[in-house]
Length: 410
Image 1 (cartoon, rainbow, N blue to C red):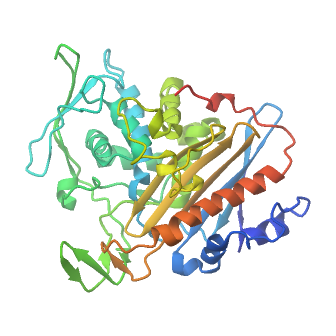
Image 2: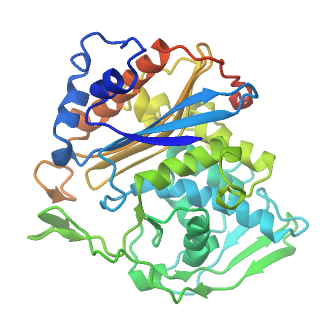
Image 3: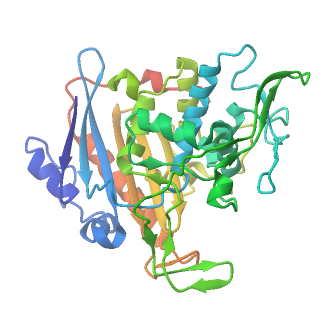
């Protein structure tokens, strides 16, 4: 069962909609000044929030109630790196569909190039054997949001596969149509590299030719963000158009995380078709911390625990206590910050979903590196995470959650 509830302010939500529960913060949002500021100025910060409370029935199955703040699936924002999550999952779904002996997530994947805008990938020095594979790309995407790793899986799947699969699963406010941090025209982004999968002796297992999509996936509303932007050193005195940029509505992003955490809560047609081993691979790397990885090895000075865990304070370089795990994907670009998370505390049994986006660009100029990420953005997520955790900690559940399936050996 899933219910959607709208509310004006989080504090008002729980006093109005949950009258039998004691509010964990007697002063409401006064202890969370940035969160309060953002919620009271929702248009300025273009904030959207989806929060899901979870109850368990007698069989341990989740019953989810969604609470929405300022949700608008038609309102465009730039989704940044959050699009990497469904592409990583779909790469494993594609792999299972091939059903080719010797082809799995660890098979060597060699990306070639035939167009000037394409770049080959024949080695991966981050891997234990220095060879690229689907599994290694997924690991880097989910650990530190590696752009090149995403681009390789985007090139493997192509726009048609990605967009049709997501639409078939009920995600109708999503368009994924370009590589990230890679200079390419919309036409070039519709061209996909030839790829070979080989065994350790170099014998060919599977080959995919160069492909090109004929369908143009674009934002029909031709969204424009900002009042100006930099292109190189030149200031362009009008907003930036995002017609051919990725789109990923909050409802769809939230739904991707819910589908991988609780696939049985969705109809068969809306699930990702993964084996349990492949689902666990995604869950493990969604929740893994950079310091827990050997290949690649990430220095903690650059990749601290909360580097990509915004609800645990992305600016705080202190270790995250071991009882907490966040199965999530973040994004950061053009003044937008996003985090879609399944938040778990194994000690207390707290579990909930939360997805949010905020836009922090007071001067409305893109590419000037003057976004208020540190002043507003990251503190907003930290306070929202702490606030919702407090609400969950304070409420009594009829049936405690058994979270053992989400405990992994890292």
